[in-house]
Image (cartoon, rainbow, N blue to C red; front, side, top):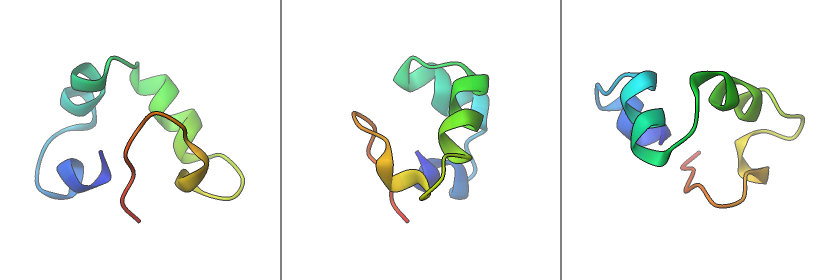
Length: 45
């Protein structure tokens, strides 16, 4: 997800692709410990 955003995709496009809302993405991004705690979504730090 982060890679796609870094490569020019919008947050909205990526969220739609993986089936979550932008609000959920923001909550995941702001979790203590960083994005690596998210289960079921491939994150690249």
